[in-house]
Length: 88
Image (tube, rainbow, N blue to C red; front, side):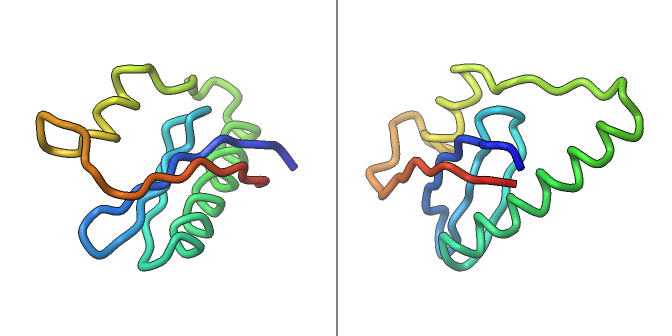
């Protein structure tokens, strides 16, 4: 089981979790739903990496994190954010 760093933010009526180590996301009606979906995505991605071996994956860039945090606007969204450790 590996450790992943996740940023959670509200997007409308949903929560979105972004994994900083690989750029995968999970979305759900609650924070826990978003984390569960993200864990599923991470586990599937890791399985494929083990099978294929040549799949590119890298941590997200600061620019990508900035885009995630500002959503569609020009200014940061003044909503709740949370940083979590996720084990998958």
